[in-house]
Length: 175
Image 1: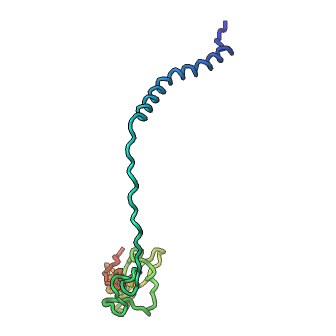
Image 2: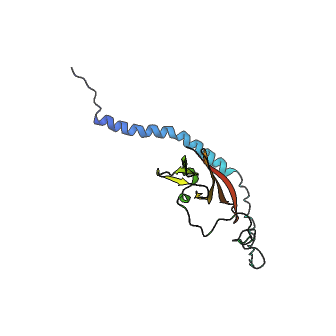
């Protein structure tokens, strides 16, 4: 015997009618509490709203260029003629290794020939270049001072931010 329970069409209609009735019965208590709270808030006296603050009128400023410093010029009126200290050589032809930052160059050895010691510097692309004291290298006017078996010593001219330069020692060590 095969028994199965079928919900007939009448059962489905009864279920559809009963669910909303149950839901309405559950929500009536919530609505009562909400309406009571709203009535309590409305019964309280209203507070005083403060007025807007007084707006001060804009005071204009007339800039007179001949009496004060231009905001587009440095604080100190240093001119290139009055600067003291080291300066880059203006009319010098740039050498090939001056296009590379120092941290991308590596010393890979030395070479002695006819009493002159050359430093061997490798660029990132793998090319090896010979340098001697007096050559320029790096992007800050770096002039090679000494080449020895352990390192290439140089002096750079670094801008100080106010129009002049200062010397800084740097070194490229043997790789």
